[in-house]
Image 1 (cartoon, rainbow, N blue to C red):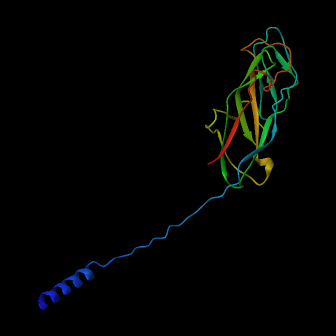
Image 2: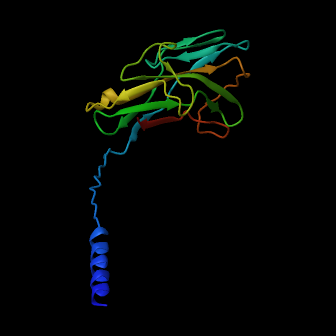
Image 3: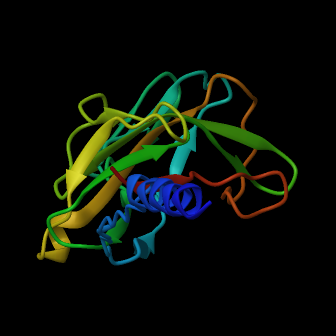
Length: 190
């Protein structure tokens, strides 16, 4: 009986030695990237100035991001306006995608005219047709690296007033009156 008990203890001891617990450890690293929140400051509206028209006006008024204006088919004016602009602020050296809507609406409170063919350029203006065409929010025509020099982060706007789509009535038209709709820009980090 002693032999059986001793044999059972030896077998049990061997079982405990054979089932040795093993412990593992792993390090989980962490990281975070901090970026200054993007802000758009110093918005400047596009101003086409005084535009004269004839009763048969059926053309367009095209303003470049350099504020130069070309008038066609029954429209005329001083040839210069004020390009729209906004300044991008964010983390210097980071790349952002810039997108914008393609159309806006001018209104005198009763009548409307479409702004189409919206273009943008960064820091310096160009004649209409030479800027980067807006294609809608989320579709970026320009990627820009944020500069420490704020003037290098200015997004300039130009666009066409479509004077052929609706009869013109005398008055002050803007995007903030009833029936108007502004241009919209979206800037996101890549």
